[in-house]
Image (tube, rainbow, N blue to C red; front, side, top):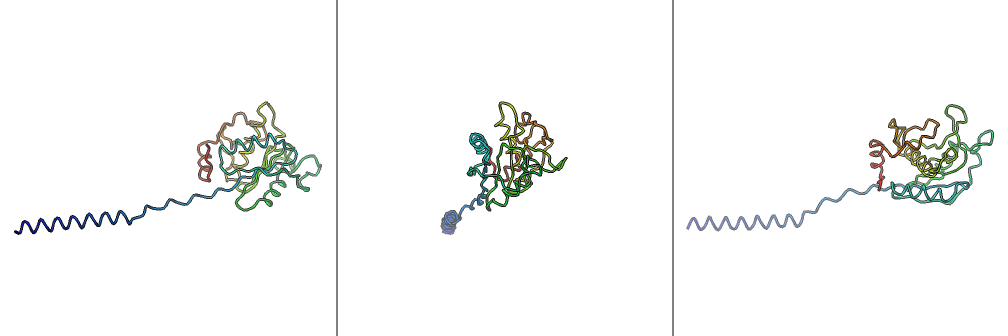
Length: 209
């Protein structure tokens, strides 16, 4: 009799325990995935001198690395951007102007085929591009680029300056896109972002499709 009683209690305990486990599985919700980081929109801002095919090429290449890219309508240069001799546009004045025009949640890359300069080794040092590091605006110029792959070089200058806006400094790796040109066209030897620079951009939402 005692044996039958113990067996009945064991069966009852087992049934209650299974019911509790099923109810727990039903009521427990899976953890919510972390919210996706909202990406800024990269706005390509061509100036009136930049050919449309160059703008489209840069946009097409950029979209392989970053999802949110738009092209703005061409604009005139700001009136105060010319240097004292009125032969070049000051890159620092241009990115200051673009930054002031950039809305929250956006990042602006200006494109021009004109000669641009900044203060570096001389008060009016000619450059291929300039960008805030970090910041929300930069500029790239095709004026000092030569060869059949000129548009590819323009993209490399543009992506280099965009890297600065993401907080990337110049890189010591020779074939990294963040390598310092030091005033020379060394773009043919620059192939892609090095592992360290790429990891910074991936954390910022770049995908490199």
